[in-house]
Image (cartoon, rainbow, N blue to C red):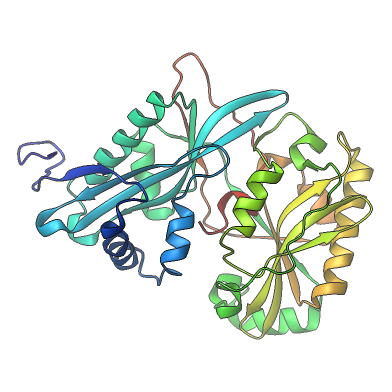
Length: 345
């Protein structure tokens, strides 16, 4: 049991902190219920939950569950294993897939207890780096735990049917987030997700010098084909390929560009622009959308290129933090991030 009425965090209730695994089937429904009440959203279901907390190609996740009075799930902090590539160097890492404390247990230091427990387990697993995308409510808690803000993520939008797009968002004060995505962005079959058989490289291998979560074929298959959260499809051109998530946002048709890959390494600026331009042209042909969205880290160096392709940079609330667990090692300061890194887990 963890907790003390005399602690500086005012922990007034004792909790059992459990290491969750898939055999604890009796906890699945209570965790989902508590998560829904904490996040104020409806979860896709038990099969999605099992996938989210299942082992991926890099190993089994670290999942800490706090059980409070009467067996209630008071909070969960979960991280999945990963490999981060920086040039030719590989770092063992883990990224956040779930963080919540139930409203009835907030303000009692439980988040800190759960996060400390995750960090200890990660160190025992020889993980060197933790990273996550905290929301506005969680941001302060991670800063207090000595996590580093590694810079934001830019949202880029390309209107492909300008009259439809601008006619709709003017009434929303140009806030895309104010237009609710419909159920076509939910769980639907993923029949069109077919990766190319030839060798391919993520953007970090095309640009160089930036840290990036490994995009192995095994990971992509697990990420997008095991328990698809949406109807993903692949766009393949002569230069490379991309992962797209099409759907409707209000009266607008949207295509989210989640990831981009090249069939060659070390692209010049001209070659990189040609790759992006070719993918955009294919998206327009296949998806018949009103706009394309693409998220990438500010450190990616793609801002001028995206602007030249007529993408618009719009505000968002995405934060990106990481924490080095190795005392002599500093965390990577410059990352190349795309939608694959933080699109709903």
